Image (cartoon, rainbow, N blue to C red):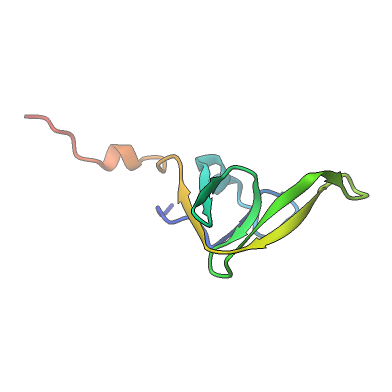
Length: 92
């Protein structure tokens, strides 16, 4: 797996942009210079995120979301498996 997060990712398992392996590594999102923990979906190239609109639910029980536009940055919070093994040790 690369160290670059995907351009488009969703936490909803029904979405075509859902990827469990990537989500298990942990994704950090910075939107308009502020770190966000409530992001349901994002697109870096299109410059938007989706967040839940309060506690409101649709008729299927899914949270209603709103789309916010602006600069989006994403990064992995945890290193990839095996990445720590590849680093050289300082054995002298």
